[in-house]
Image 1 (cartoon, rainbow, N blue to C red):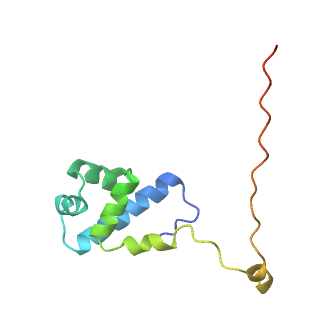
Image 2 (image 1 turned 120 degrees about the vertical axis):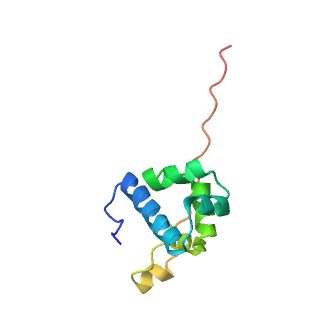
Length: 107
């Protein structure tokens, strides 16, 4: 399968739809069957396969129906440390800026 690294958001969505379609076909499921297993409308599922457009919750439901929810586990993980110094360093704490004083009312 093609890498998604340099793809646009639309290309990624369409590629994910193609991957899910391939998994559905491997199982011998129809679009109606996967839509039912995922708890979504057939029209929404068909649109997803054609365009890649889908609500995130529906994408998760389709992944659950296909036993592929674990594929989301690697998303947005912190990158691995490159050196021991990076691993030993404490993360920088973010601090809020002090509150701005409210302008006083004219008297």
